[in-house]
Length: 429
Ligand SMILES: [Zn+2]
Image: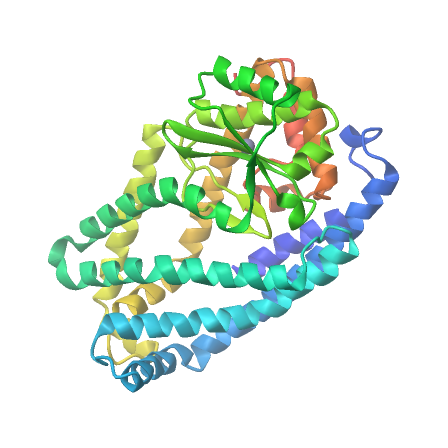
């Protein structure tokens, strides 16, 4: 996987180094802007090479030197030293996970510091202070500490108690958990990082309200998110429970789009996701003030497929769980539940990459559909302008390698989206 992905990355790096603007963007973007983001993306790409190399070295060393079994034993000692029951697998697992979290924070820190305070800073994106950075890191750890232990404990209990129908019980648990995360997470977590203030009365608000009520969107809650405290990257998204939906715009989006119609067009695209039932799934993450979401399923057939896939995965897990040889070859003399999952995960990495590639194809289709939705409402022109401005504002890659982008990106590239908007009859129609 590392060799294959590095090959794709090299192809992408070569595309980033191209000195010519793609044809569609000639006249839309100045040569000066192009040079600016070209430099930014080459910097980011170089850092990615280093990070991936360090990661593969650390991961291989972890396996080669039997770090996991040693850490597992050490976690038992830690539990014992606190006076808790050292035989309790849940305590030992939590101690183990705490060590892993601590270690991954330490190994990640140099990269996130360099990325934020050297690369983003050099290209004029970073608005974060060092304290804001530390505060966000601590908040992220707190969320993990609050949400993690109950979930981990529940999974261990299920595995210990369920007997032959384990796969079905686990699937049921994940199903309920994902429903819970889908509704709770976007409501509770982004406000920990960002300040949401109601969009003031005015023409923009009236326009968005008119559009939302024409589509029967069940709410008039409109918020502005203070993304500019972190960086100049921009975004817009919808969140909330069934009847209690909200629309959130990043203040950076409002600053970048000089024309109000463009902002309304971006909302029209987001409303398209909602109207077409592109469900938000659990990968809602907040990073440096950017809320990122993935969309997984639009249709019961796809829902069904995703659920069958999860069930199959747990079936595979029960096979791994029963293989003693696997544990001894990784240096374990016991079979803790968490370690079962970790070893299982090692064995299915290639499958995982294939699945995420398939999901990318699905989300690509969703983006085209949401664009087509906005186009049908008459927003083709302003959406086009807004996409270009957001791309310029975010200094995203303009020249991309087609292999790389189809493998890694959840969204189609700007060029593909513009081409679809320009088509007289959209493919999604
Ligand atoms: Zn979208």
